[in-house]
Image (cartoon, rainbow, N blue to C red):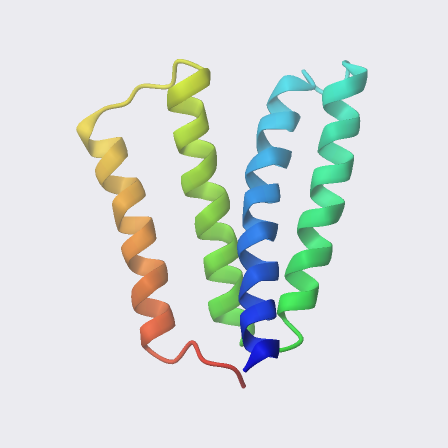
Length: 113
């Protein structure tokens, strides 16, 4: 039980680092700015490490979907809040669908293997 909780924690935090690496990648301007480039490198490494740790206990499809969903939704939200990406009804609805899809995938058999 504790292993499953830790695995989900790894995947969730890894998804947050996925958001961080996507934002850092944008801010690096094609790897021409030092600090955002270093932030990208650290964030992508931590994100992948945490996903890998989560995959020790969780099914690959479900864990990857959660990790990617958090990264995609998180990046879209950060873009709307800080980078003037449009915050239209359809974009917000799409984020909601990503979240719903991840939840449904988990309910459809996302337990530990």
